[in-house]
Image 1 (cartoon, protein in one colour):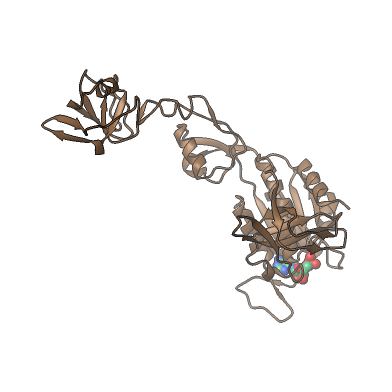
Image 2 (cartoon, rainbow, N blue to C red; image 1 turned 180 degrees about the vertical axis):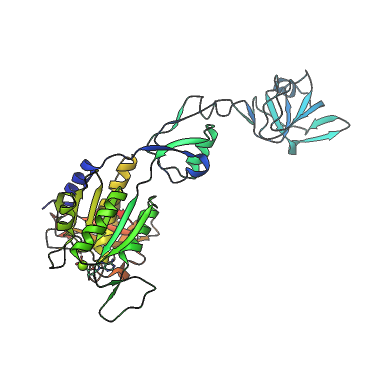
Length: 398
Ligand code: AMP
Ligand code: MG
């Protein structure tokens, strides 16, 4: 049986990159860049005034001159004027520094009377104060964003500042999330005593959307081989990724692996030495689709989705794997079965500034209610059976 790390590596070896497509600046938030974004111009593009006030020649103030005839007003967006010898130009934050000026005196330090501006007694200024020099943030041509970056608010600002009205991003994968099970009834429909509310479809769709993959079709199929074959076949043809839940264990009605095989999905592995989620199955479809068949127990489904499906989607989008995050166990844990143990945790901040992962084990792998309020889970190594409080463990946030 593969370990969790081996299973993920096997998945990532099969994942094909999604194509790129251009999107408008207004629609690029949340997408994954497929191009470099390079500075269009120096930043700032000119010596930029950082205070409302007056622009003068520093040497005159340093030499004792404190009254200056007001030559003109120059606001942000006005072309730079040229300062006449001995004068001051009234200036606004964001304006380009007038030629021959090399000092800004803030408006709070001056008073104006009859066209003469007077700087307060004893005021000392530094040469080039309150001037943000051209190109001091970055020079034209600097690479500001690399391919593989997820575009958040700051990245949108960078794309806009680079003057790009459209930007190349990874196409969004079309994902079908398929629940299987005769016992399942969706919210909103009447339910009998022997039936189960279907929660995996909405939960997996929510997790995918939260990680930037909102193009999801949610389907529910019965435990019926013919129906599964027909409908999974149709969903396979129309999607890049299938995420199935249920029907991969050893029960009589667990038809999913056999049906996938008949549809030409080649098995990469079946079962991982982990708890929960041991029966997980993964294969690749005829067009290179990734097919994740997760065990149906709600905790198993979410744990496996986070551990395997999300990294697979990231890789297809062209995002590098993030460095692992670690959390400090807040209590000792014992776990003997020689399987990787995915243990849900709450994160608690101590007054000493440490963030502790407090174990929040679910009652069973069906106990979805036990996950409420958890931040994610720690991954405890299969080769140990005791984990000390204070030890650092890999953390997967939901
Ligand atoms: P299975 O993997 O099909 O054997 O399902 C394992 C357990 O998970 C069973 O108790 C199912 O009723 C439950 N289950 C399967 N799919 C879902 C679902 N979509 N929502 C909630 N529970 C489910
Ligand atoms: Mg089932």
